[in-house]
Image (cartoon, rainbow, N blue to C red; front, side, top):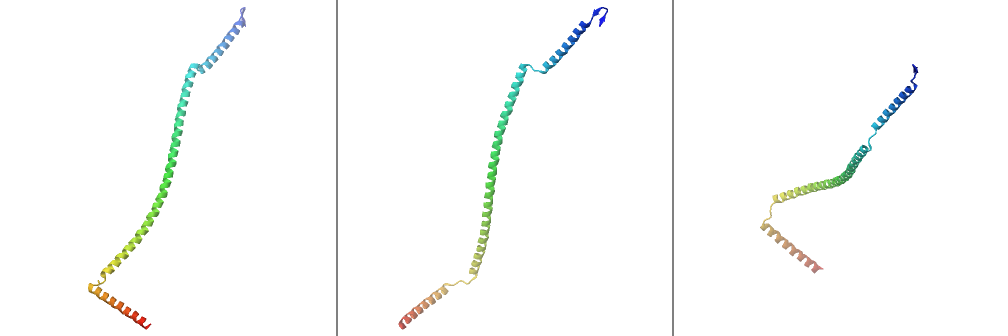
Amino acid sequence: MEKEGIDLSMLKTRVKHFFERAQAFDQTCSTVADRVSSEKQSQELAMSQAFCEDIEAKRSQNQVTLLDDEKSLNDIKKKIALLEAEAKEVEVSISKRRVEASDLDAALKKANEESSRILKTIKASDEDQFILSTQMKELEALKDDLVSFKLFLG
C-alpha cells in the first residue's frame, strides 16, 4: 500500500511483528503467572511434607491402637467363652445339687415319718425290760440244758 508516495509495507511489517511479540509476551506472562516461585514452591513442599509426616504418624498411631483394640477384643472373646463354659459347669452342678436336695428332702421326710411312728408306739417300761431279760435268760438256760442232754444222749 502506498499512499502518496510513502511505502507503508515496512510499517505494516513492524506493527505486525510488534503485535506478534506482544502476544508472545502475554502468553509468557500467563505461563509464568501459573508457575510459582522456587521459594514459594519450597515452602509449599515443606508444608506438604510436614502434613504428610503428621498424617503418617497419626496413621501409625491409629494402627497401633487398632491392633491393641483387636487384641483386647480377642482376649475378651476368650474370657467370654471361658465364662460361658464355667456357667454351663455351674448349671450342671446346680442341677445335681437340686437332685441331691430333693433326695435329702425325701430322706428327711421318711426319717420324720419314722420318728413320728416311733413316738406313737408304746414305750417299754423298765418292768417290761426286766421281764424280757428274765425270759431271755430262761431261754438260754433251757438251750444249755438241751445241748447237755443231746451230748448225754450222744
